[in-house]
Length: 282
Length: 266
Image (tube, rainbow over the protein chains, first blue to last red):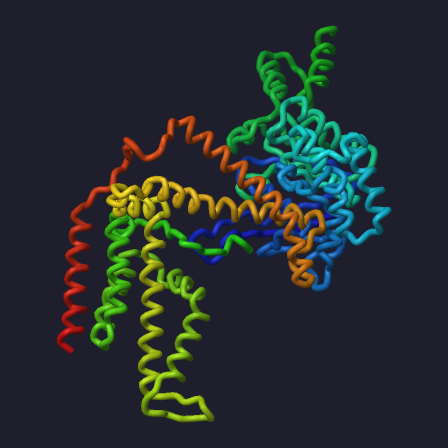
């Protein structure tokens, strides 16, 4: 097992009138090689939860085990943890600061204390993974387009060779094309590099196609945890907390209401097409 | 970590003091500070204490929260108290080498400490009960007469309120960028001074860029809503004195009469 979260609580502004429960008794186990979608409305605690996973925030109560070791144990190196659990923040392009793309990607591995030759090797690999070729190396990161900047920022985390990659709303503010590019890239990383992925989002539509497991958060608590199929069956409850199942779920439900018994397990447009065609031919 | 900074923090409860006109509170705070410097008799300090207790009670802000503001002046307080204790000439209590403590020094230091603490508490009440925007509104209106001699009062107060408004945003932004760089293995804590200064580059560059981006966005948004400076601009909630403000002024007057009477008569 990669990450185990046990009875995690987090309170912001403890002992002031601004005190607020951000996370309430979260229990979650994330296995190696999983592709998880972490879904929740704004303020549901999903970003707070991700920042616990690499030790940026310390829990008010509860434990986190990484590969069986408690990260709150005395002497546990959070720096090591952060190199293994890579976290890409929301709008990661806002963290770029170097004069050119290549040096910015080098920042992470350099902080790990690697040899200069290996630092460069890793930066090249990372930039290749996100699909930026040598023409970009010497460009200023501030001259790139929004989507390209985001790729550079993701490369900056990938260069640390994380075993787990957490992406907080990686598609925020991108156009549909940029969104598909980034999500395609994440899928490729999962398949080819075998990295465990946690994709944070508020849009079911975005993640339904890619993830094998969905965790739904609401007001600091874990609400659902299961395969997309299982979670989407609760589409009415999801609506109540301001989320929606993918549109295709509504189409399927509407068809079923009219007596056309399309399988409820359909989660993507392609699956729905095949199902409907199958029924049609019968 | 950075969330804990309490800079002119507003405490959101509903009280008479919160609803009072910011000008009344500004004037009251200034009058109170002046009175503390006039006061040099025990009775005057009793009056000042009563004033403070009434104000704290009326503000409905927990005392615990107020005292927290004193932490920032502890060092200053210690220095001034020890200077007064040991450097005031008079009847000595004891003497070690050239260091001597005098009765006059003890008395002086005690008054000094009370004065400083009251001063901080007094101004803390102002910032705890008044939002930064109300405060600059009050300043703008009270200093409006300076406009006649060519001081751009409105522009200055607008700059002040924008600056105040952006403090929490920039603090939050700093926190976020710090975390993002720490996730990439940055280390802001260890190392010597030069290493620490170097470690700030990955924090400061993105912070500056974002500050400029926010500034241009804000300027654009203001222009889109036809902001052209203070001339002819009306307010949705113009400041107007109410009965409670008049009562407050009457109270200030009474308080000041007492302070001056003590000063002159005793």
